[in-house]
Length: 178
Image (cartoon, rainbow, N blue to C red; front, side, top):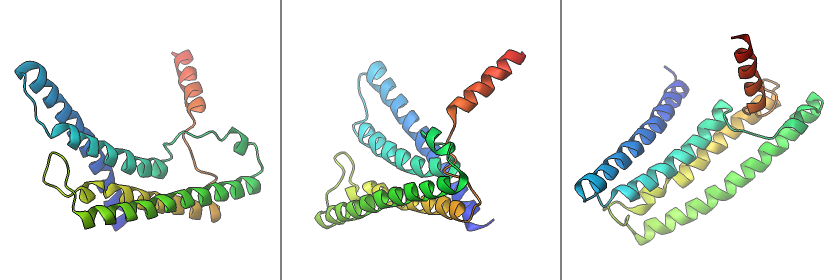
């Protein structure tokens, strides 16, 4: 198994783990509150950080899988050469945006580590739980560079975003056949 295959599986499993962990934590907390009239004081904070990890890692996964929804009706009508260059410009803007967030999150995390602030409800340094800010944007940069390389070398045409209209029409056609 190559590192890329291993990392893809790890990424998918970790995202699934976060979703399951959040669901179970919230379920247990609701039962504790409404059935036993008590609760676990750290669940809300842990769920908040899990959701941050889920969103930022999920954004990277979404770019990898082409699962993001985009408005590309204009771009699709352009000739292939123009579509390629517009895609590369859009990718450059995405990389610039990610670069700004990477820099900002690095500064923020460095300050948190230097100060030594802990989470409110658990004795864990806050910079460790917030490190997803930097990690998530590094993964996004990697994904955008992968897409950029595929577009530049003509292996891919555009971002390959999810096309909900096309999928809806396919579902409608299948329902008509039944």
